[in-house]
Image (tube, rainbow, N blue to C red):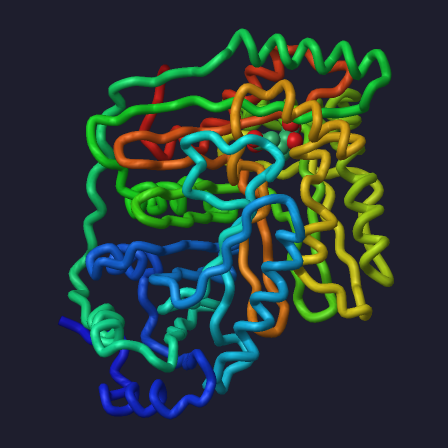
Length: 457
Ligand SMILES: C=C(O[C@H]1C=CC=C(C(=O)O)[C@@H]1O)C(=O)O
Ligand SMILES: [Mg+2]
């Protein structure tokens, strides 16, 4: 047995918790490097019902959150972004933070639903229009260094303290996630209805009603046994190393994915965003892959699909930043299963714009909604035969300095018991072909399907 966290005795914990004159207390300490997945795994062993996992696309920062000391839940469209922001500020004011490193400290992690005006389906009942948590225990792994941050109410009960402490005594034997269970059934809902919706959207674009609408669909998969989130994260981490990896689990339901798309990142006065739209599969040989990539870089339909995103993000960033830097032409972003047109944007803002206000301004970009935004959203609400829930919406974190990052939760799915519901969409423009758009959604389902071990359907 190894003790991960040896620095403080029970008496020292008590002293920190009980002498705080604020409602919450938080402290951080360096620990020896641990595999974040092992930490995530331990959470379940210790009986915590809430856990999350985040790692960015450069693998610079990984967070694992366990338990929840503070929760922000908002339902409905009214001020959901502003509420998250004010509640986070209120929490910081009510917390004594013992931290000697600027990079450590508690974070707020969570996500939003794609569209609060869409009627919530049964499957998304447990995911609010905004749910954010301050974890009881946070593991931060940054540049090869691990820090643990414990955040507790200053009136914590003894039992809770003991449960948290138990988490730090672990066996350092390798952990064994359960093997992935075999697939027993897959169900594709409303293929014909979806293709009909794509056709309708194309016609309405040609009539000049709107310029672009992103339509999504879902597929359901039933397995012989319960799906193990740790096993899935381990496979996603291995198979999609250049993606944001995220999982948010509460009471046995987990929203999980590996997305290539950054919505926004804020680091001091610097703000980053990316325009990602326009897709083609990867080639089977290097030559075919290059040919496909070159075709994508010149294809009018895909360039148009991409350009709508560039225009909107450029406008939003120009509004919020003093200067912006954006390249005039898209480049290729190659993921394991798919390649995209990609244009990064960097802005500098000395106006104190908050990360949450950037998220609010940017969501949904035309990579997930359409152009013009409101008409596209109304069209999606009316035509799309599913509730997107948290799919295609912002997911990410904010720290106590207001820095943080949000990804767009695509290439994702909802796990519950033996079942996985996966989502994929594509940008429909005037020159779209319904059959090719359908094929594109199949490519976009691949990252989650490979992680689930589903090969042929
Ligand atoms: C809507 C999705 O992807 C978006 C992001 C990149 C490329 C896209 C496209 O080419 O259609 C989509 O706009 C999805 O993966 O479900
Ligand atoms: Mg597309």
